[in-house]
Length: 279
Image (cartoon, rainbow, N blue to C red; front, side, top):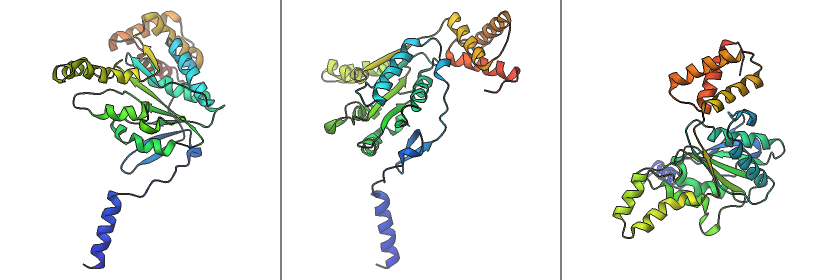
């Protein structure tokens, strides 16, 4: 066999079993995105987020998550958190806003975004984070599982940590539209096909139970919807007659067929543009 063929074989073997990744420079950015193939943490210097004061109507969830995160940033014990409920009510915005609020006093607090489809690689990510002199919030947005989805087993590695235990410098914050992360028909299917149906259902539901904090986000009423928009107007200095604001906001939400924090911000984005205000 010639030298060129041996080199090609060696390169192929190296691709199959790459060298261990070097520890990333966590001081490079306040946040990172985890990618696989190859494994890497991509720094994010400017996180897309809104200020905590702009999140109206979710006071209890805001205060609870802020307190939990502050204790974690200070090096004390803290819970994993599941933010579940209505779409567009600020679940992911709250996670990023809380991180931003604490960052100035706790620059060692890092936010790492983890995609649901990459959960199978989470043990490799935890190995990089374990022992680093930083506190890490793993953030998994829109977390849910469907039929024949085995990713939920990888989630347990984050929540429980296996034989080594979850690193003390890592917590998981996840958002989901479902309280139990799995659709009811999937749970019922597990019940009908399992040898012990009750144990199969417990296996699925217990995923949510592994989160120490459950923070519910519920659809807002019209008063809260208007309060959100008026709060945005105050912060960005937009002056508009309340009657006009009410009429335009109600018409906007009627055309969308929904009220939520996201719809309120979309209306305000349009309003700010018409008033020549940059956001």
